[in-house]
Length: 257
Ligand code: ADP
Ligand code: MG
Image (cartoon, rainbow, N blue to C red; front, side):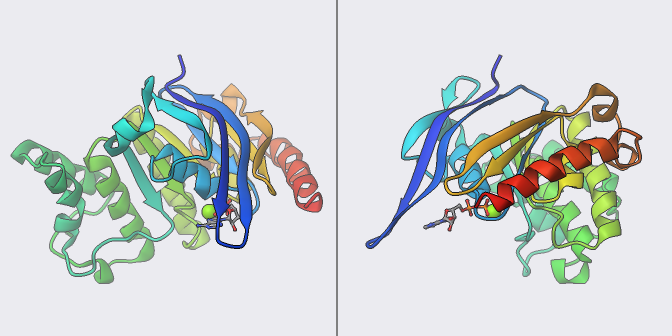
């Protein structure tokens, strides 16, 4: 039990003249294979919490464990997907997706084949020798997903990965990412300010309130929605009711600021 455990995290940023408390008393547990969302207005500490989980930032207080190990030691087992794809423009798509494996000394002929197959499964056959600038935003995000999955991270963190895309591309990518992560049994945390996206993709949603960032409420998505693809979840008869409920809470959070 408790694949990822976040235990009483507090975090303050200190500058010469001020201190900002970004997170206060955050505790939660995520099981293997779960898809979780952190939802909340900008500035409520979502990115700070992801950085702490990834071991990039040491919290002022509290601790995080992945499979009962302190996060510092499991650092390379976490994959990140961001709003911007951060592909290297001077490298080909193939070089980009194999880079993580190369850096980790894991690049075998078998891993290379598997990674190129995954690229094909993402509908990107034939782009291997092209450069990122030759691809659309949605294609680049699919490449970024392949690159993230190539090193087989235990935990994936998706920080608003669809927010720079047009609506149709975003809906298509939600399904692709969700199906892919499910088929690999990956555990994932999505950061978003989009209620619909959180409902469509998640097993559970943590709604954050700001100043300082805290967990305001937790929503468990009913089984009949969780088992559907994001696109079908959005069309389910129960979807509007859950949307309204979270919308009201989010409004409450925003007016309390
Ligand atoms: P979110 O991702 O939810 O928008 P962040 O985690 O980026 O929120 O920020 C939470 C709070 O911490 C905000 O008040 C922000 O201004 C502050 N903050 C974030 N990063 C830093 C930093 N490097 N130094 C000082 N304050 C920061
Ligand atoms: Mg953020």
